[in-house]
Amino acid sequence: MEQKWLVFVALPSLVIFLTISFTIFSIRVKSPQGAPSSDNPILLNQTSQFSILIGILTRPDNYDRRHFLRLIYGIQSSSIANIDVKFIFCNLTKPEQRIFVALEIMRYDDIVILNCIENMNNGKTYTYFSSLPRILTNHYDYVMKADDDVYIRLDPLALSLQPLPRLDLYYGFVIPCASMNPFVDYMSGMGFLLSWDLIEWIAESDIPANNTFGPEDKQVGKWLKMGNKAKNRFTIKPAMYDYPGTNGRCSHELIPETMAVHRLKRWDQWLHVLNFFNVTKELKQSSLYIF
Ligand SMILES: *[C@@H]1O[C@H](CO)[C@@H](O)[C@H](O)[C@H]1NC(C)=O
Ligand SMILES: *[C@@H]1O[C@H](CO)[C@@H](O)[C@H](O)[C@H]1NC(C)=O
Ligand SMILES: *[C@@H]1O[C@H](CO)[C@@H](O)[C@H](O)[C@H]1NC(C)=O
Ligand SMILES: *[C@@H]1O[C@H](CO)[C@@H](O)[C@H](O)[C@H]1NC(C)=O
Image 1 (tube, rainbow, N blue to C red):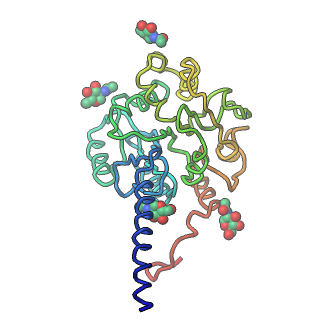
Image 2: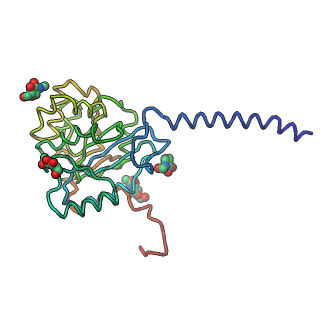
Image 3: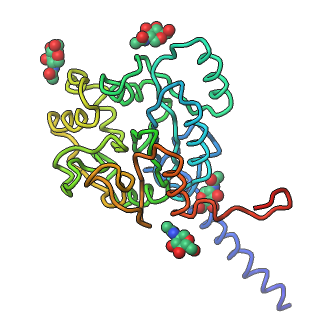
């Protein structure tokens, strides 16, 4: 008799519990801010709140660098953001690139080839940002431009963005080196980030289109100033910097709270950085290899 009563009480409670759980779960899935925008279903994560595209500007011939960076970013993840890393270059120019780059795309699908001729300060960054609304099927909350000699730590990046505005945001390492004021002057090209509304503005406005020549990072600062845009600005110093001893006051020693280190040109510098952040410490033991 008592057991029957238990069922009478427990069953409705279970139904209510399941309904509530399901409701919470559905709301999470449809989290409005961070509507999953990745084309890659593996990267969709119900817990993520926002999405970031990191475009690494590089050249078609830098095959080895891309393979290395795929390792660097492939072993990282963030629990709060969907982060896609893509390599950005201009038109292919050599017959062998059509084969080798095609192989990379077939295997990794992480390459964007823009309609431009390879250059650094002749508008590649403009072409990158302004092409995105047209060529992407989904938008991201944030778009970053990064160099191929920078090491970005994805979780610190996402955590630093979590409390910041999703709109009208310009984020990075403010230049000049000693400045801590994100309004003076512009964010260094090592890696800076814009919210999606600013990407759309860059694609539509005459201001960027008329000012594409000259140092790309400085130009972006100029566009935003001329357009009276990016009222929300954030400099991530000291968590972002040039590798120790490579660039005067823009450099300092490695620190645990690092988001990104720039100017990694040599293997010994990469080694130092990977060791410092204990990147390979999680390596599992196995009978297949001896360490
Ligand atoms: C989603 O995020 C959770 C929490 O960090 C993590 O445990 C899980 O592996 C992630 N799932 C995918 C598919 O990335
Ligand atoms: C890039 O390549 C495409 C296809 O070959 C061509 O139509 C376009 O004019 C090229 N763009 C530039 C800037 O050279
Ligand atoms: C951009 O350049 C075009 C052509 O030279 C000119 O008509 C237009 O006024 C310029 N726009 C801005 C915002 O400078
Ligand atoms: C790396 O591991 C060492 C030893 O466990 C620890 O003392 C150090 O704080 C770790 N470094 C970082 C950046 O987490």
